[in-house]
Length: 548
Ligand code: ATP
Ligand code: MG
Ligand code: MG
Image 1: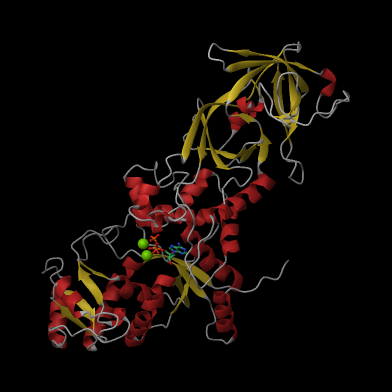
Image 2: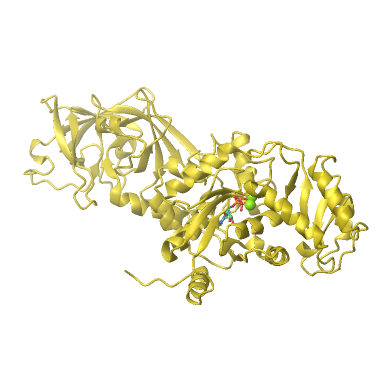
């Protein structure tokens, strides 16, 4: 296989393993269980798990659940399911909340070292003393209270003696640091809230910066990989580890995935769900992993996408069409070709007297073994696409028109003899004759036609609802637009075709099946399907239809 150059994180890991700095590579994927995972998370999952697949060692799944208000067990479960679906398995399943006792003792240790203090200043007072990036801050009047007093108040904070916001615990670092995050950051706050795992045991909770690095350290994570927003947090990450004298995990930052025509923050996706602007977290238009799964994406296509976009040190914007390219590539090799008529019009074959016959169709000419075959019933009344007939044909029109001939896929050549219109002038029926000697695979007619169209036998067809999806937003960068990102939702992101006809073989479709509806795109069964009413989602069109 082709030699691929290493990304910058792989280079760091190789150096660290070669130099003997670490014997075993340990990474983690640390989602906060405050929503469903999205395609951006998939990039971080592929990176963290991919490293240990390549270099040995292992990857932990750690739920970063230190904010009781937004976290739920439903999210924990969905996040586990999505990682497994992507094809990865974690070594240890851990929760930052399991470290609350240890994190509390880390805080006590800092107080004892004179490196943390409790502060009853209001949020406004704290902000006023913080300074600006170009001006140093000023010390809080409470900065120099004794270790004993700090310990006493911190214990009472933990024991629930104070209301939310009455006190905070701050690290005592440097109010003049050029890095604003080093200006005595808050490390614990009082929050009387029930936690999804620890219940009401705690009423003080550690801040992200005091939980994340220490959790990494507790787990002996060697390479703690996060996105670029955390570059300025690294100094603090290292400071805590140094002062607490614990395992020196190291933080490395890469550019997050940004994708056109969507938003990718759990907070914003939650708004779409809560305001019923989509049908749920797994709405097939959502950039969530569950949405992509329901839309018909395969794990392989998502992993391939993550591989292709690579790991960079600078922010960039990836075209949604690249994601679609990846699923098209995969489905082209694996999806069975079937026939479905989305916008039906009747075609009657006036000289077909057999009633019906069974034809044989190859499932997938792209598959190495042809994908097997199936039976396709044919009869004298068919459904075809309305758009495959033109009463007055355009130039270079190779499909049906009065007097024109076309091949019916897997079947015969037919010639349009006549058509019927209703009182509004709409064509309702097309009348054809067929050429018995032109049967596919056994054509002795000597007639050459340029067009081939798909069809289903009216007597044998099943009806189905077809859901077509387009981009969720009309703006390529809804996050960057003026006003609310929701103002840029695409009102035409979902089109429902309630009365499509599909070949009877599709009655057996299951949720894992992937199909190419010939000439129409790739489709999969939706979980809304019932035996009475099949529902299919369009995963992606056959060609890139995006305007550039
Ligand atoms: P969001 O705001 O979407 O919830 P987050 O970073 O707050 O994102 P976490 O659950 O904390 O969500 O993220 C878990 C991991 O996934 C983190 O290591 C984070 O860096 C990574 N991650 C999140 N979004 C992206 C993205 N768009 N591209 C790459 N990695 C991401
Ligand atoms: Mg986060
Ligand atoms: Mg977030």
